[in-house]
Length: 434
View 1 (cartoon, rainbow, N blue to C red):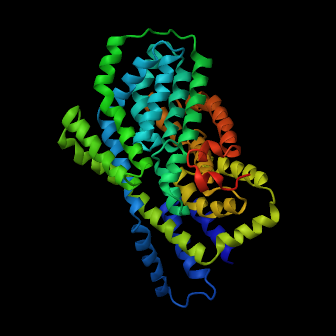
View 2 (spheres, rainbow, N blue to C red; view 1 turned 90 degrees about the vertical axis):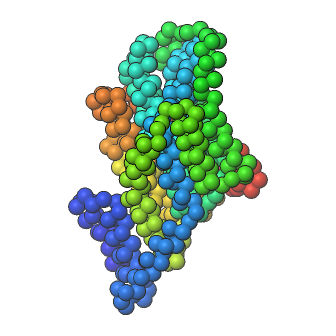
View 3 (spheres, rainbow, N blue to C red; view 1 turned 90 degrees about the horizontal axis):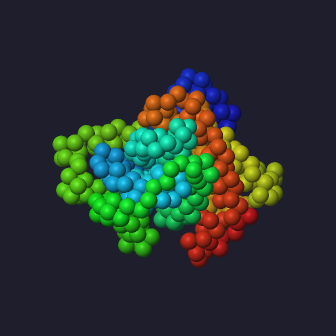
């Protein structure tokens, strides 16, 4: 009854349209009460769940999630996004599709600060979309480019989904951040090539050295932010959690005291918005960690690996199957739910086939990044529809060609491990891969 009971419980909760927190809580309690062999004699023995919640909440890396979200919200309400866009526009003016490429650059740089796709789309898309359409770029092209550029927030480090994956699988957050650089550059490059091919004939500007000077003078502090954050992490000077705290401090310092675009009375409201986003997420996360601990103690992933090994012998076959699975999952589940539920099960299977768990994490996140652009639950589709004031159907049409480009990127990332692992070197880069 064990595994069938879980499936029936899942089906019942989905049909009743229960939120993820109810689903995770119910499955966790079910597993602890019914699956141990021998079964628990008393419901009071479920106190171990409470202990696991404290165990999950005691992880230092958890602090990075609220801090990066607060930093992103501070920048969205301030002027950092606008200043980044101005630098990008000044530097790309004479290039074919220069303004579109400036939008891609701006999304990439802001993603490296905020760590969130919806925040990147709101901050950059809301400013760039009117500029692109006013300059003569097609409406559909502009929508698709910015909605897709917003998804870079989860693959270009720092990335909140990367932090969650690291917690669930037990890999280094810093390694994941480094591994995301190559795939992030690849996807940005594909967007730029697409821009030139689709809109390269739109009017080009000229170098305006005075504008370049002013843009750099006003935006250099905004541009330094990802350098400080990522440089500190990669150099080992501070951890991912410490970098998140520095991001909040830097955002307040620059926006309140230097740029003076943000006043102190607004900060409590920003903190409240961030807390609202985090309240449910944290409880879901620690429930998921508790469930993951139970599965490991009862060797559920190991049994699944043994079963799959008898069915699939080739790492290539496994990668094809898991990519198809994740693309389908991304269409129906949000990225946090998918990582919390699937990462603890799929990562051990990937390792069994000789796939580096850091590389597999990047593959998983790129798959789910594409899910941000696919109906019926693609988050960026709904965000783009709201900020661009366009029907959802038109937004879906606008991103369709770019989804195809990202699928090409996914194939390259899956079958060329060095795109992700090349910067890591040492043991990580040398890990067996298909």
